[in-house]
Image 1 (tube, rainbow over the protein chains, first blue to last red):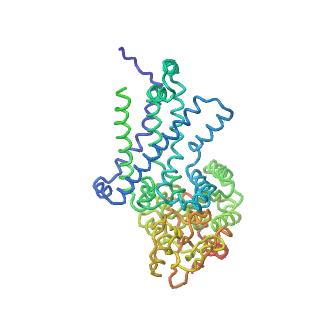
Image 2 (cartoon, rainbow over the protein chains, first blue to last red):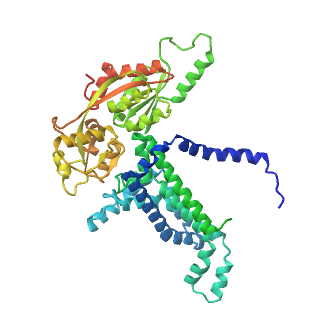
Image 3 (cartoon, chains in turn blue, purple):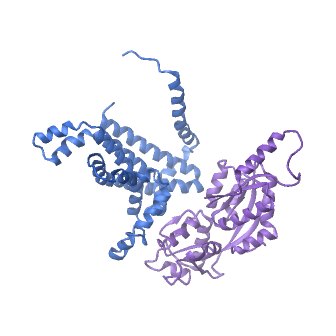
Length: 261
Length: 259
C-alpha cells in the first residue's frame, strides 16, 4: 500500500493532543522516588487498597454487565414513550459531579434515605461505610459508559443476521446469545472496559457515599488522595501502580478480545 | 469550596486600569488606599467566620477584592506547595503551618489569631443520649472521625487517648465539614469537631461538651504566602483579622481569643 503523507494540519494538533496526555504522565514518572517504590508498594495499606479497588471495580463491571446490557437492549430495540428521557436519566451520572452523585445515593440508600431507611429497619442493612457501598457508588458512576457503548453497538449491527436466525427457527434467547452478543462483542468489550476503568478511578461518589476506612472503603484513589497530604512521593508511586494496572489490562485484554487490529 | 466576595471583575478591571497607567501618575482616588486582589486559603473550620471577615474587610477596603478558598488544612498546604495562587494562608494547626514555613512558602513569621476547642457533634435532640467521650465506644453507635492528617482528626485522637477511650471510627473523613454533613444526613451518630463548627451548623446538629481535662485547644496561625503579588493587601488582611474588630467577629463564631 502506498503511504500517503499525513497533512501537517492534522499532525500538529494531533501531536499537541498526544503531548497533553503524555506530559503529565512523564511528570509522574520523573518525580516519583523509585528507590522508595518497594516500601510504598509492599505497605499493608497499599495492598489492602489495591485489593479493594480491584474487587470493587470488577464487581461494579459485573453488575454493569448484568443490568446494563438489558437496559441498552431496551433502549436500542424497544420503542416506548419517554425512552429518551429515561436514557438521559440513566446516563446522568456521566455529567453529574461524582460528589453530588454520592449525596444523591445517600438520600436514596443512606441510613435515613428513601429506600435505605426501609433496608435498615427491615433487614438491618446499612450501605454507607461498607464495601457494598463502594461497589454501589462505582456502579452508579461507571455503568452509564457501558450502557451507551452497548446501545451504540446494538444500533449499528446488521439485524438481518438475527432475522435469519429467527426464520431458521432459533429461539429468541438462542438468537441473543449466539448471534446478537457475538456481533456486538467489540462494543460489549469496549463498554465493559470503559466501565471498569471509570470504576477503578472513582473517587468523589465513593468517599461521599461509602466514606473512607482502610480495608473497608478506602480504594486506591482515596488512598492516593490522602497520601498526597502526608507522603507525596508514595502517592505518586501508587498513582503509577494504578496507571500500570489499567494499561496492562487494556493492552492485554484488547489483544485477546479483538485480535491485533 | 469557594465563595467569592466582591465583584472580581471590578477588581480585575481596576488592576488593568492601574497597569495601563505605566509610569504616569496613579489615577486611583487616594494614593494611600489599598487596591488589588487577594486569595485567602483558609482551613475548612474557618468558613463561616472568614466569609464574614472577608465581607467586612472588603467594606473597609473597597479596592481590595477578596477571594476565599476553604479546604482541609493539609489540602491547602499541598495546593500552595504545588503553586496555587494564595496570598494569605490561615491554618487550623501549627504543624501544617510549620511545614509550609520549613518548605519556604511563607513570608515572615506566622501569627496566632484564634484558638478553638473540641466538642462531640450529634444529631439534634441527641437521639443516642451521648453525654461524653466514653459513649462513643458504645456498641452499634456509628462514630466517624476526620483522618489523622486533618488537625481536628489529630486532636480527636489526642482527646480520646487522654480520656482513655478506645474506639475505631467507621470512616476517616477528609474535613470537619464532611463529618458534620454525615451527622446531618443521619449516616453517622457522632463525631468530634470544633465548638465553632457546631455553632456554624446551627440547628442542624447539636454539640456535647468535652470536659477541659480531656479537651484539646487548637491554635490557628495566619501568614502571608511567599511570592504574593499583593503583599500590602495581604498583610492588611492579616492585621484586620488580628484587630479588635476582627477578633470580635471571630468571637461571635465561637473562637477563643488569640491571646
